[in-house]
Image (tube, rainbow, N blue to C red; front, side, top):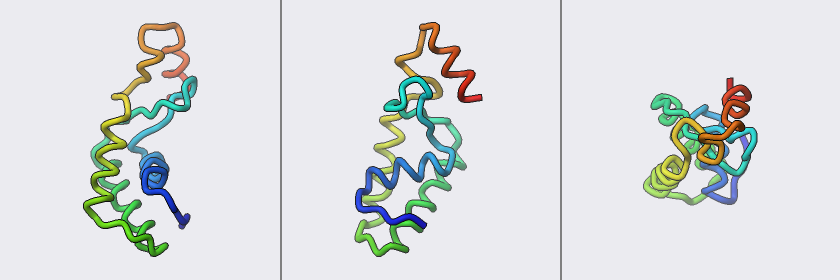
Length: 96
């Protein structure tokens, strides 16, 4: 398992690993929430396990808050920068 020094990075990385979010293929700085509750729960388990195994001192409430924040910042289901543009179909094709 990876070691993490930054809680925000760890949460984002493990949300992607769990399948709860992805990046837009055209706008990689944009996180997109998949909308899979099971993946989001799995992400919490991944983050908790990863941070416990490497001895990082984050408390469970900090982990939950960081996950909640990352999911709240992610766009729902599609990239807002691509919405209504010809790029949108490109984003959707790449995600499929």
